[in-house]
Amino acid sequence: MAEIIIVPYAAAAGSLVADAIVRLIERNREAVLGLATGSTPLPVYQALEPRLKGIDVSRVRGFALDEYVGLDPAHPESYRSVIQREVVEPLGLDPALIRVPDGSLDGIEHAGEEYEEAILAAGGVDLQLLGIGTDGHIGFNEPGSSFASLTRVKTLTEQTRDDNARFFDSVDDVPRHCITQGLGTILRARHLVLLAFGAGKAEAVAGAVEGPLTASLPGSAIQLHPRATVVVDEAAASRLRFADYYRYTYENKPAWQAI
Ligand code: F6R
Image (cartoon, rainbow, N blue to C red; front, side):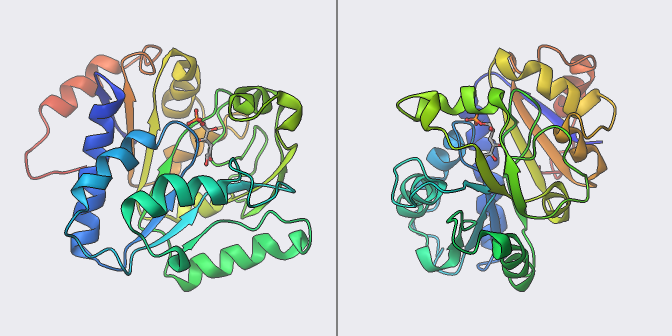
């Protein structure tokens, strides 16, 4: 099963995961990062910024999980813009080595396949950051997504559009379609790191970690992965049945065993 780490607040999760990413880059200057957008990964990116000072990141590569379809890439909330603003610029990465799925309508029917090829050509993702939607999605794999799915166009649920309306002027401006790495794509990454903060994520986290393996809760796919780490705050952990065991396990973790 996944390793579950319950932290007191989001910044603690950011530090923990940023340390793991720094170790990865120190081992491999050409590390391939799987990048998430939304609010959840921000503490990781913020913690990474000072930690990467003085470390050569010029060859680090990255693949975003998803993108809205039909949104102008120059729109401030396109994931291309978000990745540039929140990740590439502050961390000093080479923009030419950071990919985001192409959500432009022109050629969208081939964009998924091309993205899969690019990930494979890079040798696969070393560490994939994940958030989780209140409906249990990872990437934008909404309920019903196949565990074998690859990058493709999906329709966002109304719940996801409502959740993401905070980034736009109104919910009507949230695109209806997205292009997202599939659950099969995500499961190929060598290490999954799923983060979740706040009570609004508690049910999705419990379903993903302890619920049955089901396409109805796509986050449960992480149970199939041999190396998955879940880092949650107390509120997001509040529905976990075995929370005490996870705390005990983490407190008694051998010092040599990093996340
Ligand atoms: C973002 C992504 C989504 C988000 C999820 C949670 O690239 O793939 O799965 O991680 O919607 O969003 P936040 O973090 O904004 O609550």
